[in-house]
Image (cartoon, rainbow, N blue to C red; front, side, top):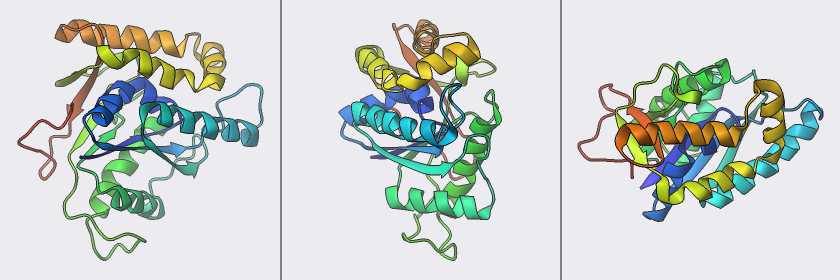
Length: 233
């Protein structure tokens, strides 16, 4: 299968679905990780240009640790667009990947970039099917099934699907640790360790489904998006 995961910023996907993406790679899927924004507000020490360059290298290292391809749409933090131009840009990425499964942020996650990334991915995945929306790649035939990822810290999210990531959790941590600049930033801005936050959340979701570590998801229950087979690993 072709799996497309769309996050707002570098490091979001490693935190919320990195283990699932690792397991997709293990079963032979082609995995593409897309970030909508370049992370240029994620520092109290560097300028926007400096931290964006740092985070681009970190994101590529994180994707490589997972075995995925990496694409960044290049929006600045807090400025992710959801207009037709932005949707067309995302639609072309979707067409280039031809995904069988799309993973998106939950639409009610804790800050607007995550919510906007959901809107952008969800709308563009339909736009990608319309032949008269012209991009560099040909249209996809049907909208891909969408699964939304857990929210940060699991707040206001009721999963219906779980993926056991116990056997890949150490590699998931290594992928997140590639985002070295964010360890200090999140400790400064959010008074928590991103690795610790991820570990506690995965342990909690694992407790819910009887394994040590798990990631949680919910399918988008809309017409044309459902499949009669399991898509998650």
